[in-house]
Length: 149
Image 1 (spheres, rainbow, N blue to C red):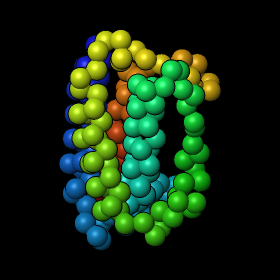
Image 2 (image 1 turned 135 degrees about the horizontal axis):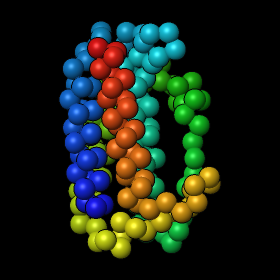
Image 3 (image 1 turned 180 degrees about the vertical axis):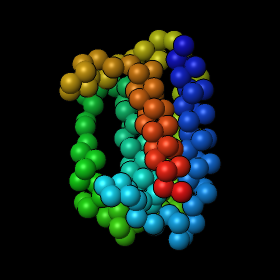
């Protein structure tokens, strides 16, 4: 079942990358509708989130019941300089992390998929659960990019 989640993650990753690569230097920075991010901001956000997710998987595999550190995505655009960042670098980072995650997790045993981390609100969460959340996150932002194009 967890391997199925990795396949789904791969499909959602591929869909996100295909949609993101449709943008160019002009279309990527077009402001989103009121209250919505531009494609550039979406890509920066996904790059940052994918880094967090990857660290969570790797920690769960190498540390006994690590605590998940949450992040406040609402402050990221200003604190992490979304305005000054290059969206192509963020896109390259997403691509690199997505490929790395797929390779790193492809050989996990059933027991490894069920290794847990401690989430502040949800309690114990498995790598399988974390990957499903990341997969859904990619899917949601793929839809956001479609609306922005």
